[in-house]
Amino acid sequence: MPTEPSLAVVTGASSGIGAVYADRLAARGHDLILVARRADRLQALAARIAETHGRKADIHVADLADPASLAQTAATLAANPRIEVLVNNAGLAKLAPFGTAPLADSLSQIALNITSLTQLTQALLPGFLARNRGLIINIASVLGLEVLPGSAVYSGTKGFVLNFSRGLQKELAGSGVKVQAVLPAATATEIWDNSGVPLASLDTGMVMTVENMVDAALAGLDQGEAVTIPPLADLGLWQRAEAARLALFEATRTGRPAPR
Ligand SMILES: NC(=O)C1=CN([C@@H]2O[C@H](COP(=O)(O)OP(=O)(O)OC[C@H]3O[C@@H](n4cnc5c(N)ncnc54)[C@H](OP(=O)(O)O)[C@@H]3O)[C@@H](O)[C@H]2O)C=CC1
Ligand SMILES: N[C@@H](C=O)C(=O)O
Image (cartoon, rainbow, N blue to C red; front, top):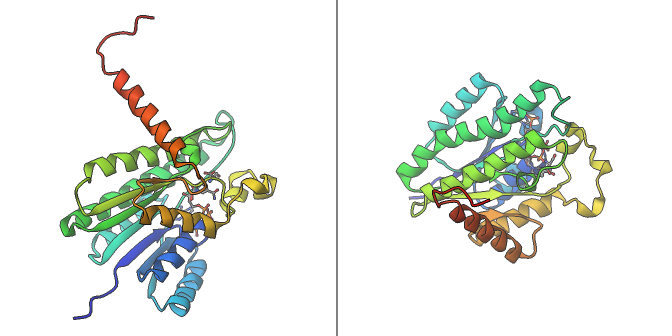
């Protein structure tokens, strides 16, 4: 009996990193559900995917920062047992000093980067666990590891994505459900011009193409990496940082105040 190809959901598929993930997952044989607000962009991508890869891409137009639209999206996805992959990619950056930034900018970053990612994961995970099969790719950022002036809220949201992913990885260990956190560094997408820091103002030598970013992230996935930092050549740096982080945590489990 021929089986239907698995379905991959990509949020924020209308541009940048999400659009390339959609292309690459289609090339790997997945049908797709493309989620974002801009229907015209999603339709154009769905047509390209059908033509290039012969895969079916449905579009789901939603504002994931809007609670009602998010709830409707979560319910629709939860009801689809063919979904095997969730790429939590939709994200927003507003890079400005917190003290003077509009509160709405902070809250919209939290709503999209944290709340929607959490709610969509919660919607799909029970089905993944019931079928003991699934993959969740959470797009964080290297700005989840470091904070620059102007990135307090954005970095906070991406720190959440990294730690949320770590928690899921521990809870799901031994199951057929895998979670990868991806921490891109600067990548040439629309996010920059929308963030208040124009892409053209960045040192071009530090900016990756979207295609290179996604292909490196998928190479990390294929090698079983739990956390992938696409431009990081020296994996030992990450391993030493992780070892130091765990040693620091262990050193707090004394139950006593430090002598100082
Ligand atoms: N580019 C970079 O340098 C880096 C990016 N990242 C992360 O990568 C992810 C993708 O960003 P990137 O491709 O760069 O940026 P883009 O701005 O190109 O893409 C963002 C995507 O999110 C969607 N989106 C934005 N707001 C909403 C919303 N309210 N509801 C639904 N979808 C929404 C957009 O679609 P639409 O407007 O049609 O709704 C778009 O498809 C983000 O999580 C970002 O934080 C991490 C590190 C570096
Ligand atoms: N998305 C970028 C900031 O706008 C980043 O995470 O580096």
